[in-house]
Amino acid sequence: MDNTAYTGRFAPSPTGPLHMGSLVAAMASYLDARVHDGTWLVRIEDIDEARAIKGADEAILQCLQAFGMRWDGEVLWQSRRKALYEAAFARLGENAYPCGCTRREIADSRIGVASDGAAVYPGTCRGGLAEGKTARAYRLRIADACRITFTDRWQGEISQHLPSEAGDFVLRRADGFWAYQLAVVVDDADQQVTDIVRGADLLDSTPRQIYLQRLLGMPTPRYLHVPVVTNSAGEKLSKQTGALALDTANPLPELLRAAAILEMPLNGVGTVEQFWQSALQGWHRRFGD
Ligand code: GLU
Picture 1 (cartoon, helix red, strand yellow):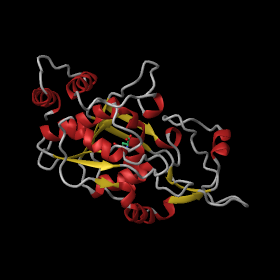
Picture 2 (cartoon, rainbow, N blue to C red):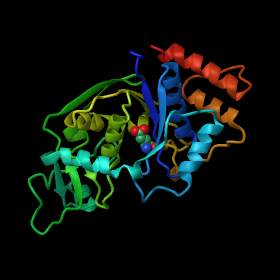
Picture 3 (spheres, rainbow, N blue to C red):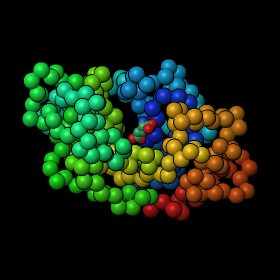
Picture 4 (tube, helix red, strand yellow):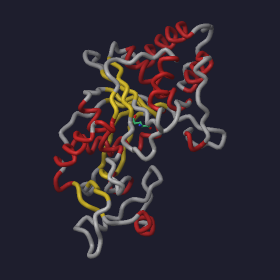
């Protein structure tokens, strides 16, 4: 791997306190950046203002510090960067089109289910809004027969046929907020992120993001998607599935649990400092080049 310019990032959504799933993602991206002598950025993804919880951003930042992770440079907040998303959207021109369909109408069309469980958009408004419809969201027109293939540093080769597995996806939501897919692509390019290390729950989104990067003439970073933490019912850990906040007063056991999920069990580690030393060595052996 070319280490000359490595920039990684951790991009939490402030929808609640940091939980084990987000600690695992933060730890992996932090270790990867440090092992490659890179820069590690933190970006607060509060673009979905309806879901952001007041104070969760500061709590997440404090938690990262309590666990011994230090970021480089200024923290960015997506909610303060809307002009960039607007400009990128404008550059997409005719590739973005208004859609008047309701969620119900799309679900009823049953043309297929995307890999993330959402209904694939049937393309109803591709040729223009039907009579009597008003624009709700804006979608990206996906070229027919488009397949995106990339090599993930953990998961191996990933390939997705975008029209059937994702479909024309939303860039600007019906509530007026910019969609995650657009904001994340714009920010990663603007911050010159070279390496994205995050949870495998986002693996399905990556081909859409690569497609957008290509349309916008932006470079595609390297990707590494770490295993997703699930609860006893097999659901992805999140505030909705009852994830517990982490115990920042007693960080070592939490760090060791996260390392075990990263398949890096560490023995004989008695302090947070020793933890990071061993974890860096372990990561270096696996992903150092
Ligand atoms: N904000 C997203 C989340 O917390 C992560 C985005 C990303 O890493 O690309 O799930």
